[in-house]
Length: 343
Ligand code: GLO
Ligand code: MG
Image 1 (cartoon, rainbow, N blue to C red):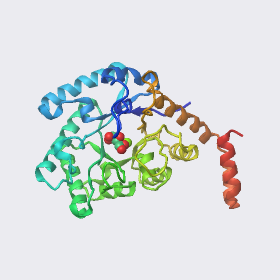
Image 2: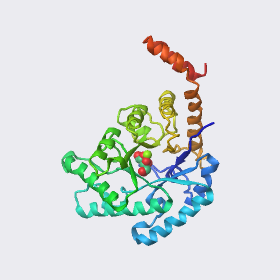
Image 3: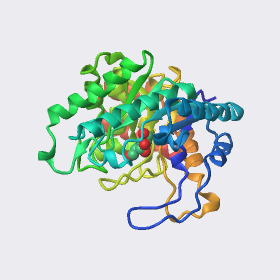
Image 4: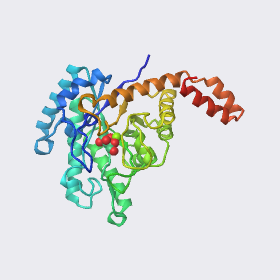
């Protein structure tokens, strides 16, 4: 039996627009999306702040909390739990050149204030976890920002959030590029290191997205291992990625099953689910997918995870230990391949 609880965000059910073409599927209302979660095998909902409260920029703090509380009721009705809330700091005109690292003090102020409202929403939804995908905290032209100042500014924003609320935790989702050319927090080592610049490193952890690690030229399971060693892996964004190109958010395991197996294996081996963490997905349907089956990437990713979990659990660890002791890595490699192929 699996003790794993799965989550995804409403943006994972989407209309298929890309930078070169319009939407190809009708949009589905948030409430209709919520109805799908359990059917697809998911119990957790990941949020951007404005997934919960779309017009939050035009509302008072009290109005925002009231609207988020109404969303919490809907979650309860469906038996769902909010896993985290992320401030969406990449669409507003004030975040064109970044939020926390913008050179304009008014834009930085907006970014911090928006993040405090994001905390209000998280609390109303019943979660203490905030995710930072630092989309535009980087540069297109290196000389445009001072990287020392920029990193300190991100830490200052975290401190302001910690001052505002004594309980919230922040999980940083590292990504090396896209939409920016270079970001200030490209890998999990950077994310964990950033925590040390804040007033309470124990409240800063991370989210590992498989595709983001691959875009940084790293192995996602090693990134996970690094975070697990620090007890900082607070959620994951599993997906897959075909080499160094745009962020593809493909179905988990669809490109490289062995790489996916190693992610499942490290999570299973080190009790990730037992520590109460959810298995989050960040996957997109292909643009070519017809609307009537445009959620299959979610249930497929979950099914692939669970099949790989069986493979992780039935892996012959005695044989593995013997082969490692003999330093017979060729034999170990063949065993891994045979095991994955079902022999
Ligand atoms: C984009 C990110 C994005 C975040 C989401 C949650 O590359 O993966 O989807 O995960 O906005 O903050
Ligand atoms: Mg992600």
